[in-house]
Image (cartoon, one colour):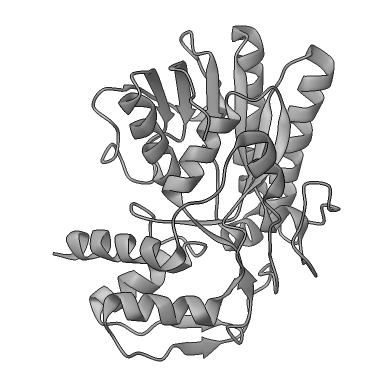
Length: 305
């Protein structure tokens, strides 16, 4: 990984799962960090004490307070919620993104936008590259695609150098098991509680699971890049059934899942080609799936204690 200089940074969604880990990393390198978050998910539980907190909804507009780089992570992130409430999803993920871009344009700041890999590309017969046609199969993916297009448009119109990172299925400590997309946290939470686990469909759906610490490294590297689009994942394919087995091993349980009908909006195969991020950002995921699950299980047990 290249060395990234200390910067004045703003992180929308900086009290959330990925955002709080990113803020911790920025603070650790000595940067001045502004957290912009409405605290609707975790409250201020994960807000770094050395960061400045601005509690607000991004749809109301943001004040970047001199930030040079804006990591835009605030979003409605759940596919099934987007299916049930597409207007709300679009309001947060499209209108909110435009508000952030407006603030960045006024401040002369670069935006690093966290988009989605699987939900943007749709079904992938082979690992998707950044030039693979984007065919989102859910309102969430559609809204993220709209956000990307606004960002690309601002780059064309204003000559800005905003960056897009299309993330795989991120997992790790602090992920909420209440959101249907966080399947690792859901499985581990159920094991900790001694409850049954559920797989929707036959479990042979393929995903790219990437540890949150690796995603933070990629976002930091992207912040120093003058524009572009990058897939951020492990580059490995894992079935949901194999994931369930790995989570059960980490938890030390012998449990079979309950199978239920596949859900509308869920993809059969989502796979990412991550070679461009390796070539241009110097990024490759370092955490193995098993090691990442072990770390997440240790955190889950602490929370349950």
